[in-house]
Amino acid sequence: MNLDTVIIICSILVTAAIVVLAVYLIISLVQIRKTAQEAESVLKKVNEDLEVVNKVSSKVAEVTDKISSPIIAAASAVFYILSGIKKRKNEDGEE
Picture 1: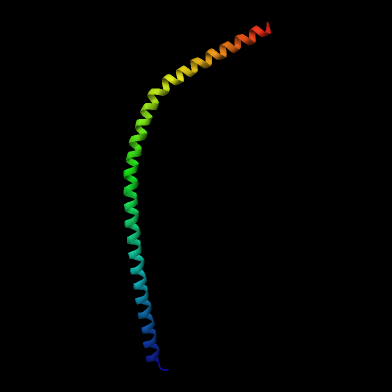
Picture 2: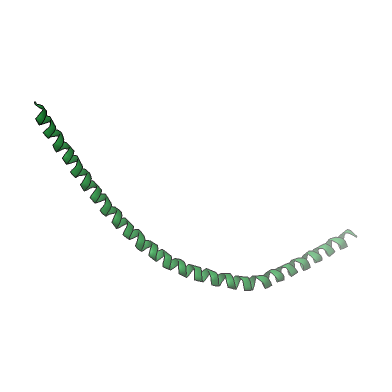
């Protein structure tokens, strides 16, 4: 086998490897593009849903702030009244 034959065989192998690489890259890039499009559509839907969740959570926070202050005040008053009554019962029982 002479040198020319070896060079031709190597050239064919290199060319075949380049073609295989190009096809592989094209297939990979097409799949990446499809995946990116699907991810974009999912993220758009999530973004729309997130806006609704933010609106609802802000309304819930407003309502909770308005309601929680009187409830906490009432609960504190009941706690202090009950603890005062318990203290008196304990003092009456000790004497």
